[in-house]
Length: 295
Image (cartoon, rainbow, N blue to C red):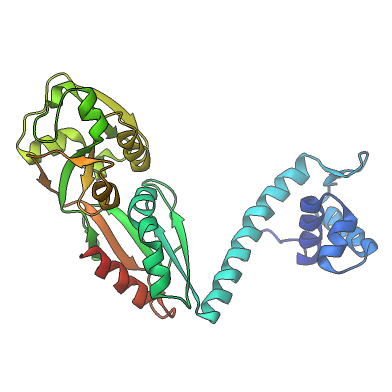
């Protein structure tokens, strides 16, 4: 296994590269500028190459310096995140929730006031994540899809009944109503990238027992947030999982088309990450989500 350079040299290099000067790096690390210079010189001697183009002021990274800086940036970033999580865990006052952006935007944000009022002594950190994105850390994880086949201890939060919603202005422009409409004359808003994990229109028509028009216009998006925003803007019809768009249905920004609906095995599922239930507040906030989701 390759021997790593000394940590003091790596931190001195990283601080100088990030700050753009040896003086700023010295101030950040609370050492003298000559000490920074010596540490970087020792690092370069260990690596067998220089890392800075010193012919410019301020100093610039050369190709080798760029490569090392990018590696250290990723590594130190993970270390900083881990340290912050450990400190937060010790304080017991921060709970991180990871959820799809559509859920965050249309279900969680309208209820943030209730969440904050229920947990005044806890800071809730929210990380949005689309299907297919790399895993993001969270004490509580909310995902969309089919029930887990791996035995993961999670519970359904939302999403059994699936029905179409549309802006009233869209219906008005086409001379239709919520109880009198024609899918063949409407634009169907779709989300292709997660089709195998999401009810798309063909699968919804099959489950609802309603024939899909042979020719119909579709608009395809990469996230559910974009689908919903297009529906709110009067660009077409979107599928809605029960409970997700309640705030828009209550205000009349969108209306539910009467008639066909489907019961889907897909939905939003919630769990606490392994080993995180001991974090103060996680169980209580998990129970809050389940309670509000069941209303």
